[in-house]
Image (cartoon, rainbow over all chains, first blue to last red; front, side):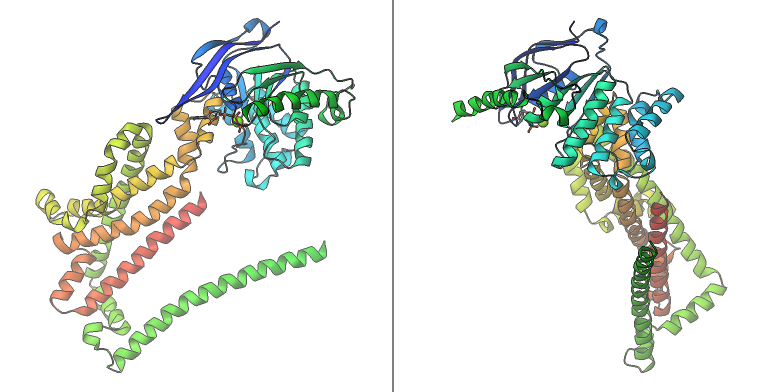
Length: 257
Length: 261
Ligand SMILES: Nc1ncnc2c1ncn2[C@@H]1O[C@H](COP(=O)(O)OP(=O)(O)OP(=O)(O)O)[C@@H](O)[C@H]1O
Ligand SMILES: [Mg+2]
């Protein structure tokens, strides 16, 4: 079954001085409940791709389709941007309910769900604090709750951990990876951390440098009982996948030189 | 734990002491200034007829104060400033929102705003008298004219500087442009709006006094002009001091209000 299908999508940015072709003929599919990672060199068009999937941008060519029968609605996509973008003029709680407020659907039931998430992700004691009083990891979790509160069918994550230090990053990735699997969400994660991609994703799409094309799609099968980022790193297959990805990205660079 | 508390208390005491030091410094400047003014005029180093003196100002306040004239002048200026300040604030926020909403409009209007802002407003005052007469309207409009153009530009800039990723967040959560305005732009600009208001209230007072110089038969500006013409410099000084107190009052009120938010 297919949840999201991206067919022959191209996109260019226009400015006075030039036309920047960001994406060229991108095609791939996402199955329901799958965790897909997208890796590629910096500036290749990964964020652009997510903005297209989310509907913030319209493709110049090609189509992006969502399949209702797979439980994915075009109007119900959660997008976690590169920065947490918490509003300093709101308390943590009021930040978390922002999406519900905007969509006028702040029901008792949703409030209870948010309460449960705040407890589970260790933010309950901080709900009346300002975002600046939280640590980087806590901010990221608050941003995740804000996204999950909308109960999205599809989650788009744009390097959500890049602002964190290495240790927190692994911890938060561990957390968030588990949360997403628990909730059984379909997710697309953009990252340029190869270990992160291997340890979190079921499949990895490798993009070339700009204009981005799909270079390779690689399935990840690790022989660990629970797929958490920490456990994954000690799986015997990990290094093999890492080398394959590394070579893919490297060959791109050599061609450029 | 006990030790920590002590440390914290020491920190608080230190803060308190610093606050007092600042207050003492501020008051002593005032006291020294008044003392010097009194001393130099007492000793005839400065001519107290021209420079007045704290005692003479106090006397003027007491004598004029009992006849209510002084308070009428003060109340008029106060009222005119408040009215022109409120109108300025409302018009500016409205205009800045409009310019933000229609970027084309802001591009079209920008040179005019800059031009009008640079124009010395006292040059407009005589025109206003011809158009609007010498009533309160003229004074209020004169007050607004000083603040309004610069303030629109500043508020609009402030709106534009709000992080555009925060705007995008609203769209990713399914919001529209109106919600970008109400959830991001306006609340995110509150500090900018407050500091803009602090500047505006001062500028409105300037405009009101300019207006009163030229057009009015009442108000502290009128009192200054009248006092200087008949060589009652005590009146002039008294009016100036009342203006200062008023400016201070406005500033502190807005500051207090903004801290409550
Ligand atoms: N608003 C824009 N206008 C013009 N060009 C843009 C715009 N946004 C992005 N680009 C260009 O499009 C290309 C792809 O940008 P994009 O942000 O999608 O890259 P990315 O893969 O997410 O990079 P990074 O890994 O650094 O986040 C870049 O070369 C960039 O210069
Ligand atoms: Mg990006």
